[in-house]
Length: 202
Image 1 (cartoon, one colour):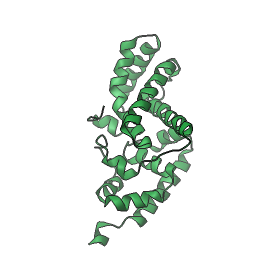
Image 2 (spheres, helix red, strand yellow):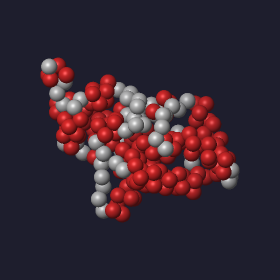
Image 3 (tube, one colour):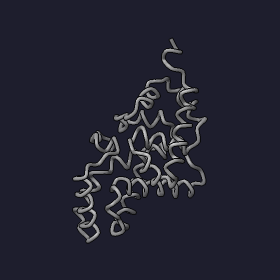
Image 4 (cartoon, helix red, strand yellow):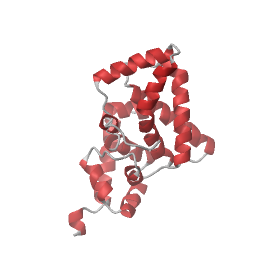
């Protein structure tokens, strides 16, 4: 399942033509056309898997959750609203699936930002801050990330690894745009303070 992602998916960007095609495929899938849903699955399974892996930190579990996500999506496909990007809709389902599984285990595991960047699918870093973190000593990054909240970590990955804009992230995590910007700003400010620059390291 781990493989190269098209740049458009890695950056969280979907063209208007792709959105129209996704909407048509979703409509056909909702009418019972299995092949249409198969196209959507092939198009987005790696992106969903990468997000789930970041949340659960275990490849086998990530595969199980990803399968669950697409089963949920298939059952709910008739409720999909085309005004929302299909990938963003899948991310919302994925987020809920991870939360449900975490509640069942009564313990929620979080992967660090550095681990998310190090994963084979995370080959597209879309912001200089993320590149700086990826280039820093892994132990330093892990220690810094431990001092951030799970929500701060999630928002940083969605913003700087997945490339989603603030409006999309606000819908995914269920918070207002201004709240997301504030959390992002505080998290980045903390990391810049906690992680020495290359100049400081000499």
